[in-house]
Amino acid sequence: MYKVMLVDDEAGVRNSIKAKVNWEAAGFTIVAEASNGEEALRKLAEGLLPDLVISDIRMPQMDGITFIKNSKELYPLLRTVLLSGYSDFEYAKAAIQLGVKDYLLKPVVRSELSELLIKIAEELAEERQMKQETQLDQLKSSQQLLVLQEQMLLQLVKSEWFSLSAVKERLQQLQLSQLALDHLVMQLVTVELRIPSGRFEDWSGRKDLLHLAFHMLGRETADKWQAVYPFHDVGYPAILHFLVLQDEPSLKNDRTNRFVRDMKHHVKQYLKCESVIGIGEPIIGLKQLKNGYASSMLSWSQSTIFEESVKVNPRALALTHAFTPEVERKLMQAIENLDMSTFKKHVGALFSVNRDTPMFAVTFLTFRIILLFNAVAKKFELGETSLQQHLWNCQMTIWNHKSREQILEQIDALAQMVMDEVRKTKFSSGQKMAEAIRMYVEENYCYDLTLASLADMFHINENYLSGLFKQNAGVTFSDYVTKLRMGKAEQLLRENELKLTDIATLVGYSSSSYFSTSFKKFYNVSPKEYREQYLASLNTNN
Image (cartoon, rainbow, N blue to C red; front, side):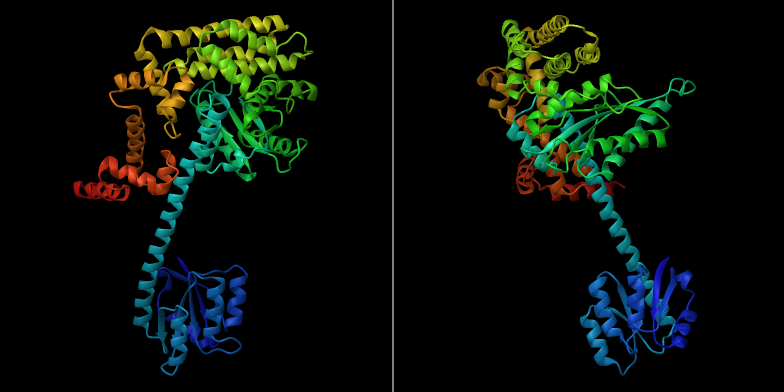
């Protein structure tokens, strides 16, 4: 039902209009009446905003023209029908200038009122449908964006970065440019859902539904807080991670603790489960993001359902900053070059016997190294995950080691396993190496990939990489990237759910005009024309 307000200084006229037609049958209900413009404005201000106002022109205190002028300023989408007599021509002209399109002559004729209501009902229905479609488009666009944001955050904490500048550019595209600020203070939080034993003995499928509810609850909770970003690893559905931005430039801000208490309370209240929480150390800027993630995972691994999070010795945390991006780069290069002696040298510098390193810091550094191992394994396992799963299991048992020596032995053993995987891909055949590079490109085509940057990432000669890629993919590297982007763009255009600017962002173009130019060059039609032709073909077939 569409809501109507009647505004006329004569109660008899209002009653006459109400009796003229069956309002409910026409799709309307009269929700309010007013005797002049002032009273009508007061009722609008109280929160009563109808779909339609039928107002007389001549009224005491505030006439219809003044009322329409004021209401249009306050409620520009309010639709108004004017009641006028033949002698009100000058008033009617003023109303037309204010945007009033519909009017009724007094005395109101039943047939004219009925026809006008049918017309207005059709227009209101069309407006509502357009508004719903716009809201749906915005929702679909935001959902796609949120998926990409989560994927980006997971990649930042677990995988090898393409480059800092490329990361910042992609953050900008995904509306996460705030995260690229150099002095931004952040914390990582890890939350695990603990399901009581025996809860799903009758039907194991319910566990998947509970995990889904857990993810939805986590996102809803984060959404109520400003600048809290959830993400997860699909391989571990009982765990959610949150990147929490501090609202003050201070490392002593308790915003993270308040969010954690909120999340823990919601899990218990709505899911009837407990949760295990890990709060990472405060970090400053993107370069420390992996350290923050590792410390949150370490805190989580030592926490229980009975405590909020393991408290960390500040002195121990200070030592963890020895694991810099430069150290990470050197370790990764040594592993991918199969240089065990250099790798041990860099690890030895981290775990120097001359440094009084607390056991927590030793364990943290080991977490970071295993995280590095995982990134290398992902690059060279060619779709397999057995080594990555083994690394996860080792990461969860680090705390069981009682000495620095035991930990170093495990690091060496794991390094050898990762190097064996690298060797298997790098030196068994050029086809396997090309496949590793191709898989990396398919996961990262939204970045500004170049042969030079890929050659540096995989530690091979650029000319060799170019020839190897073309030989195995059948096309040049740049053509392959373009084909990937265009294929994804075509899919999104066919789904007809997103704007062209959103599609450009999703497939890695910072400029929608550049995207359109590239698409037209590839398909010989613009993205808009392609979508229109595709939809027309569907209608023809139907």
